[in-house]
Image 1 (tube, rainbow, N blue to C red):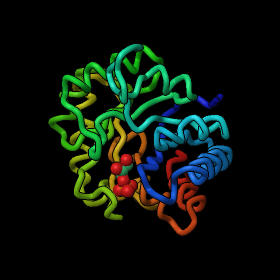
Image 2 (tube, rainbow, N blue to C red):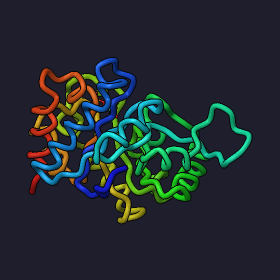
Image 3 (spheres, rainbow, N blue to C red):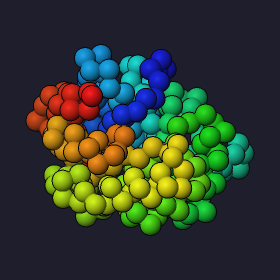
Image 4 (cartoon, rainbow, N blue to C red):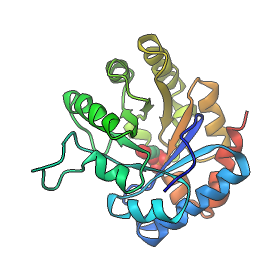
Length: 229
Ligand code: G3P
């Protein structure tokens, strides 16, 4: 169970369903994140597959986020992801509406409420500034803007589409200044992370830039160092 708390700037490493980051490897990524946190003091969360979540949370002090939860309660909801189960397994937060796991706006609203009831930090992913504005009104802890065409591309949103990051920051803060804004898609190096903060983002969401890196420790350390300000 993590004793580290969620702080911004925040790096979320989404392990997705990559072969390199499942099972025992998910635990290795959590340990890498722990080492980088100890070196830099930058808050890092790992988001493993659900079946790996408990083992990852038990094996390190790294923050663990679920990749998804459903807006269900205890009871007759076979196959759903109960927020309380995630928290019980050691997660401190959850992603919602990732580009690869999208849900309708009404479900986002209900899921934020349920995740809150389980004391989870809620980061809602969005693809556009317009949706960022709508979701900000629902009051999640953070919104992560990720243009889908750049996901996994190695071309960073903060460099290729700075206007969408700036636009999301403006739109979200205009609705609710308490909601943090993260950005993701194609982030691979320190310059990308630094550019994200320059645009007003308060953290990054990254996957392949770390999971597929030749040296994931080195890659994550570079991202975290670029965010030490
Ligand atoms: O959740 C993070 C993600 O969608 C970005 O993926 O591979 O472009 O860092 P990637």
